[in-house]
Length: 222
Ligand SMILES: [Zn+2]
Ligand SMILES: [Zn+2]
Image 1 (spheres, rainbow, N blue to C red):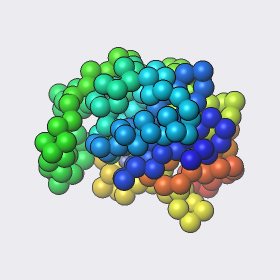
Image 2: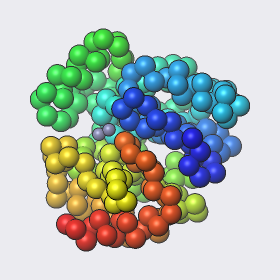
Image 3: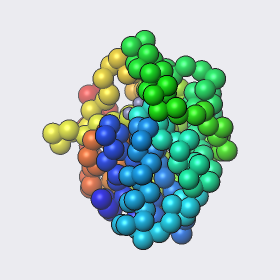
């Protein structure tokens, strides 16, 4: 569904992914393994474009529910893959996915079942980089290389798993998924200073309007 003009959210089985429809298409996250046909169908049917128009795939962080269909989507589109350098080794398959042990065992099982392949990123992001119309904001805490993507013109921000939006409030992910809580709080304080209307989250519905007030309210609760 189109959230605001040019930003489309595709609800996967577990996580959301997003298409930014500009001159070129940019895909933000890819969902679980097996999600690629959902994305390509959306591009063809709703956007009336070709999957090969996706020129860039930006990954908010290395967790399986966001990179599960990455190797497949890269294969289909030939797009350049961008990820923060601190999360790059996880998608290269050089480091086990971070998180609790049970989650790691689950990731290994999923990788085995779906035969997901490691991906060599084309673009290593750092704080302050600009990709498409979006500024990269490094927000470590959930993972070392978690990022937000912010556009000061439409005042939209993609926050990955940093925030959930439920019952009219922003919430942090489960504490077990915040291995570096102090860094996380610092990260959220930084983004609460931005002028934000729209917040696109990795697992819940989007905030459409009034993002800054919700962010300020959220960080005041720390
Ligand atoms: Zn995550
Ligand atoms: Zn997630």
